Every structure is written in structure tokens, then in C-alpha cells.
Amino acid sequence: MCLNYDVIVIGGGPSGLMAAIAAAEHGAKTLLLEKGNKLGKKLAISGGGRCNVTNRLPQEEVIKHIPGNGRFLYSAFSVFNNYDIIDFFEGLGVALKEEDHGRMFPVSNSAKTVVNALIHKLEELQVQIYLNTPVEAVHYGEHNHTVILKDGKKIDTRSVVIAVGGKAVPYTGSTGDGYAWAKKAGHTITELYPTEVALTSPEPFIKQKILQGLSLRDISLSVLNVKNKIIISHKMDMIFTHFGISGPAVLRCSQFVVKELMKGRNSVTMLLDVLPDSHEEELIQEISKWVKENPKKTVKNILKGVVPERFLDFILAKNNVQDDQKGANLSKEGLRSIVHDFKQFTFNVDGSLPLEKAFVTGGGVSIKEIVPHTMQSKMMDRLFFCGEILDIHGYTGGYNISSALVTGRLAGMNAASDTSSTGI
Image 1: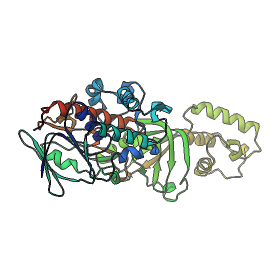
Image 2: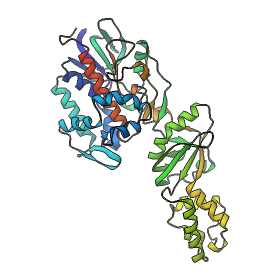
Image 3: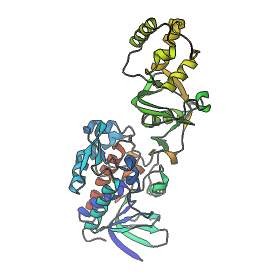
Image 4: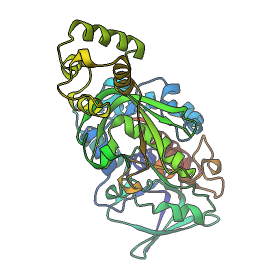
């Protein structure tokens, strides 16, 4: 069996769906291959099942929130950017709303709205869709490429778009299949590592589960380098777990921790400020005043409500303050030490959950080998890459999906323009 197409898109995630739509809109006879039984599995779980389709922050800010080679996207954003994504979905009839930090969600609060609109568009454009169709290999030729399916069938095409994702969240179909096809075309795969991932800690308070399940809101969390200088800080929420730490602030810091560990460090120090809007000296003065005014009250009662109770108990125990110790018996040094722990509590992390448990893959097809304004391979004619298979990664919050949709759009458009309208 040998079918002919102008463009074959491999992978039915965000970038693949967008690539297939763009290719078909530009007149290409398009086939979309998906090894799973559904399209858009990753979209369906993004944003807690509500689908955070993009972010409305200024383009410069969006690129800043893609710390893994986001600058590579400047050329792509000049063609199709986050505002174009908003217009695109609204053009499909998906009404969007803006939430905190510029995150854009469907008004319906359901990812299904987004996925169904994309599928409807594919059908309208008469894109051929094969589900449950894993690809075995891609053979590259001078005039056309051949996609070989697991069942042995061969399909010829002028251009191929590889949009199979990385290795994170494998149950959605991202199992790293595309790296071998990229290598076969002469591409370099940079080292893969987990990003947007929970971190592990060897600290006794973690091992003893003293703070397990404790959530802290609007804290500042920082990653320190070997010289104890701050590499990155994020002000968000976090949670202590039975193995370490997780939550939004941790996920955003995680790639910087992982990169430090990749340099050969055994552990990385993190700095937690549970009261980032207060200055340390001012806090000391204020609490000293409370102590003077209430010398007979226990230290615990004086400090009640300043930080969450479980964290307060932990810090008081760390500073050898008993539950019944009165304010009058708290030394100035003791008070300073407690406040210092509120503002600058340090602890070590020694790893992360594995790549399969991460939300996003770091590393991938080297961007040095990709043409920035077309997503075409510099190593092979009529071969395009988009989405998470590329060595580009951002924070969650609409940034990764923006990168996937933008690179998908360019890959599909240019794969179509690289073919003859009559097919092979």
C-alpha cells in the first residue's frame, strides 16, 4: 500500500494539530498520524483539564517565561505569536477569558471545547486522520520521504512534520519516538532532563514527614549556586511532600536545580522566604514590640497567624522554643533567629522525580540545526520539527503550549509551501 500526500504530520498533540491545520489551510493534501486512540491528549489535561491555551502577557514577557531557548522563538513570533493564538481560537468559535498572570482559558472551563474545535477544523479542511497508527520509521529521500508504519505499510509524502513531543507525561503518547527519526536525518539530540518537576530532599524533616502536606501560599523560593548566590527566584505557592517539595514555585525552580545537579553537584541549596512582602528588620522590630506588650503570652501565641501554624511549630522547635515558653523568656538572639528562618530558611534538594513524572522535557532536537522562521531542518530537505521534541521548554501557565502552537503553525505552513500543489 503506498498513498501519496503533500504533508504528513506525525503526532496529534498541540503542535501536531496546529501543524496539520496550517498545512491544509495552505493547500497541502495532509495526513495526520497519531499512535494513540485520541487526538489532543496533552491538551485535554493541561491547565487542570481546563486547557490553558496561551498567555496574554506581552510577547517579550512570554519569551522570558520560556527559559529553555525561548529567544530562538523571536523569528517565529514575528510570524505567529500568542495574540495570534487568541485570535485563532476565537476564530474557531472558542471564547476565551483571561485569568491571573495573563493565563488564557476557554470560557467553558473545559479542555474538550478546545480539542473539539481543533478536530472540527481538521475535518472541515479534509485532513486525513489515522488514529491507533504508530510509526516505525521515516525514510528520507531526495524527492520525497516515506513514513513506514508499525504494521509495515508505507506512505509517501513530499514533506514530513515531526510533532511527537518529548518524554514527559508518557501516558499521553510522548515516549521519545521522534529522537531516532531526528538522528537518522543527521540531527543532534541535546541531553534530555526533567523540567517542571517535583524535587526530592534528603533533609531529616522531609524524611520524618514533619511538614508533609503543608501548603504555603505566595512564598518566595530561590535556587542558590555553589557560591550561595541566587540563580532564580519565584513567588508562588508550594507544598511539602513525603519525598521533598512540589507546587508551582517548585516546578518553576526545578529546571535550574536539575541543571546544577547535571554539573556534578550532589545537592543544591534552596532558600525559602515565607513572608516575601515583609522586611526582616521591620519584622524583628514589630514582633519585639508584641513580645514587650505581651510578656506573659507564650511565644507560640504571640506569633500565631504570622505564618501557617505547622510551619511555626516547626521553626519554633528548630529554635528550641518550647510550646509553653513565655515571650518574656525569649532572647533577642532567639527572636532574630526565628524571624531569620521565616525569611531565609535554607534546605537541600538532591534530585527530582524522573523525566516520565515531569510535566515538560528539557533538551531535544538542537535548535542550532533548525531554521528559526520556518522550523525546517537544516540537515534534511522538507523535514520540519515542532513542539516539545525541540530543545525548547517553558514554564507551565500557557507558555509551553504557546511554544507548541507557534512552532506547529510555522512547521505546517512551511511544509505546505515546500510542496507542489499537485502532490508527488
